Length: 402
Image (cartoon, rainbow, N blue to C red; front, side, top):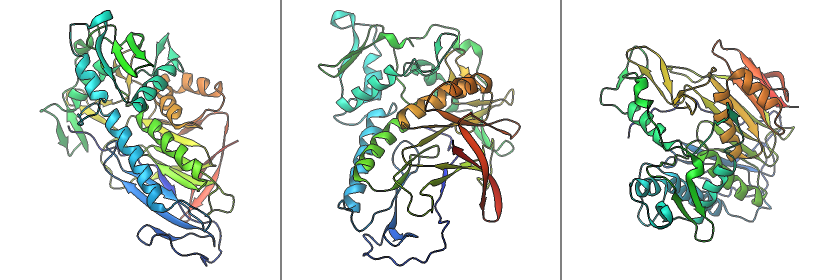
């Protein structure tokens, strides 16, 4: 499977705004991962994982002398959560003894129903069952023209786009600095797809899933990382240890009071969207967030190819109204308490476009957003204040929840 590496990375600016001298009062809990923080009672400990969700996942925790959980216990627990969700959500690979999204889709690929006119019935892990329930319960959050802009049943259409990005004719083009593939023909989508999520049958007693029509396909990419990140951060919140969790390039959540800043907030940088190759990844602004806030970004530059015939950018955020890439901005970053919901919102709000998306966010309690437009200007929702932040002698816009 060939995938584009996302050019967008959310960078956490982890530095102190204080000028105090570090004099740590307890022993370094692990010299392989930790350094003294700019506070006398904390260490800064960094962990990373490269095997899950096709991205680099980073966690920074700030243990103090009173913390009872060891760093190894924290790392092992987070690794277990990430491994479980990575394997269960995987739509490309099978794992021994695990009925995951791949297994569900394979079993559904049959024209013959089982008893009760159900196709592909399968018992699944309660973790996956609850995740699918969560997705289905929130598919109605954002609609346009009566169409749900987030749906885990869009798999048959997304499979076509996956195959288009993996054509043998695709080349990494030096001139474009991007993957270049044959442009899709509209005739590819001129047919009926089994994408009605109401045809998904869940049995809570047996934790089983089935379909009332054949050839359905699930795709949980629109919420998987955010959902898994929320499970991880719920675990971390119970430990009462400050942290910043970066679930790969466009999904960040903060917890606790940042011991390295005077105001206790975390400073998260939003990288400028770039189509094509770039030696650097400059950021265009800083989001100042407190504990319990998730930031999730969707954009047209994260996974895409250039059409060889028309030079158009074909990105991975597919509009279920057209079956083609949607949205009219380069990116949107949403802020919400729940990482799973933030992931859903980021996809759907991006597809709404700027005008409708701004109206939707401004009328949705607990949701705020920052748009990066095609002309390199920024638009923010009503609940975000814009100030100035100085880093390395350069000034950047700073976005803060009002």
